[in-house]
Length: 204
Image (tube, rainbow, N blue to C red; front, top):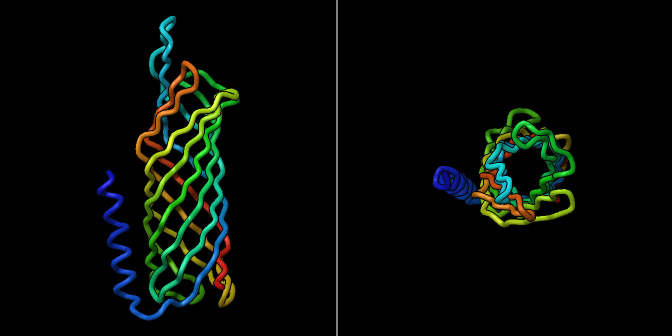
């Protein structure tokens, strides 16, 4: 899976540099917010008596926020992205739970290829690599883990003015396995997150 996600990033960055031998156009900043849906995780009861074994962890839909600093080329962009995702745990196995939340903070380095601009909008695709700091709060007991992260993206920019655009974006965010132990409980997951966001991009 690592090779599958890293390869698109390498290809996109090569395309960007090959197609944009001209000088840097403009720097931009962006802020985005939206929703995030996490894939299932795994709960493992580490106690001896009684041992409840392993169960699936289901997450409720959550929220995300992103801030971005980037450089725009004639046919693409390079950027640094800081992200924040928050989801509550909905159930463990067949048991509904409350008071357990899952926070993912990420720092990603992304490459985008902007498709040919059509009128006032520009479709784009991209990929990124970076790291994620994951925090699990289990009724006040916290556990953390740092993992590698990857993402692939697609979206469209709607140009309001020459210097302002609205960003509508989908990100598929993936990490290596995170293991979070809180007392006698352990949660583990290869984090898979579907992110939908809307934001404003401002060219400086």
